[in-house]
Amino acid sequence: MINLNKVVASLQTEYSRLQKEMERVGKALGALGHANGSRRGKRILSKEARERIAEAQRQRWAKVRKAKSKS
Image (cartoon, rainbow, N blue to C red; front, side):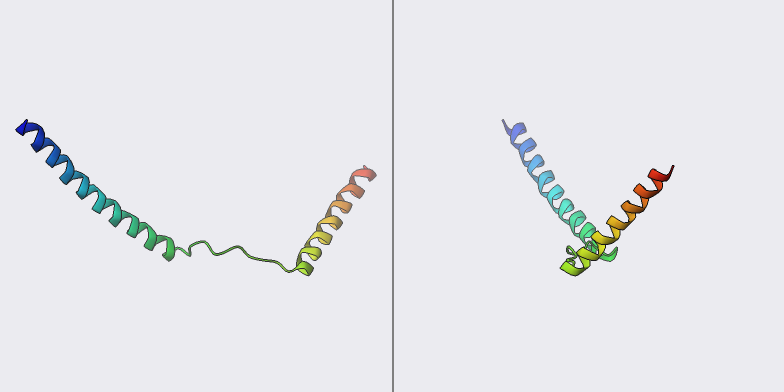
């Protein structure tokens, strides 16, 4: 039974060490994420900007359809 207690104690020590190591790795990754220009929030377009983009896309598709009908 004493041997089993030693194993359990050893595993608990190893578990604590691994938790600390994972915390250090997490902090390092977090620092790298900010250094590389981490992801920004979602950009919001105005209604007018969305309409301009939609109109430009409609014109591009009209051009494609027109070229397709000629051939």
